[in-house]
Image (cartoon, rainbow, N blue to C red; front, side):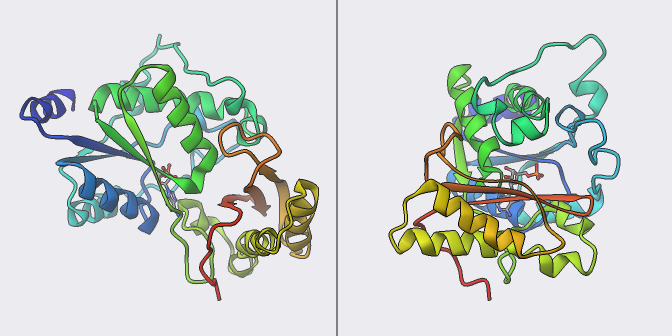
Length: 273
Ligand code: AMP
């Protein structure tokens, strides 16, 4: 992978990286589209990273559909797909880990111990393998995007981190590989994340700035959905992920499926009707 990428760079071409865990959907393809617009060559990686899954999480059952993914990426016009094996990325004896203090310990980091250490480590390794000038991440995983931007700067990677908007279904549900886990009755219930973000956004646009009231609004909408169990609903600063701020972040469980979503209050949201 590095030889391919360095040959491109030696020709003066720019290389963009889109890291994914596969089970691709329109959200991933939007990152590829943006990268294609910005860069001469685009590399997508598919790697279900065991390090970022906790014990009891869904590593074993995470959807894997390689043939379909390769077909989608070919049609989206990527120049290379990087498909490392777990044993190549993490051979026995590899014990070095990347930790982003503070930011990596809040919210998702607190709920999923070790998660962001796994993300940070794999992202740095992907940067070292692919040597991109730019890497593309989705705002869907807002805390991950902030963390990657931080580590890219802190560790002098020379990689520009580009964060792309959330792609949603017509009813507002953010596209996610994990949506496939939702049972039939849970699927309509899952729109409560979007409905909560919309309600808080409207309150914010009406002038409300009290973080406690904005948070209460999120919790009201989520609390009205019997199938939803809230892991967290907060309004935080988009860089530190501590309150106060104007980024509304949600993690909600439906049975065994855990969904996350977020919105910068004050920015426009589609209707979601
Ligand atoms: P994943 O395969 O879930 O690790 O996601 C790979 C990349 O796609 C991450 O940067 C995600 O933030 C991004 N992504 C996932 N879902 C969406 C979405 N609905 N809209 C935009 N980007 C997304």
